[in-house]
Image (cartoon, rainbow, N blue to C red):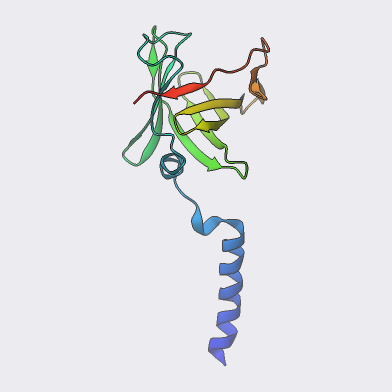
Length: 150
């Protein structure tokens, strides 16, 4: 009898965790790797890094995901603290930019295995969109498709 009494709450607890997805929560690095993000992405592979041709890398070091950015005049490597795949297949990342004292979230979509595009990008606090619906909010220009270069 005691086994039946104890097992019901345990089963209920496990079912609630399963329904919430908690039991299958992956690290940002695992999620990014499974989605196919790891590597180097550019607008024009082989062109020198610049503001017009950002070299954007996604690497794992010590189990953590880092976003390596090179814009020619400078570079950094902030940590991505979270990554989630949405029902539409997009990848939502949270990146802590310590030098800028900001946290940003953005969503990437695959155009195919070797091409991605940013569909939205925002500062978390205060919430301010830099990109919305695949277009820069300041200019209305579409975000460019990035190609996996290595």
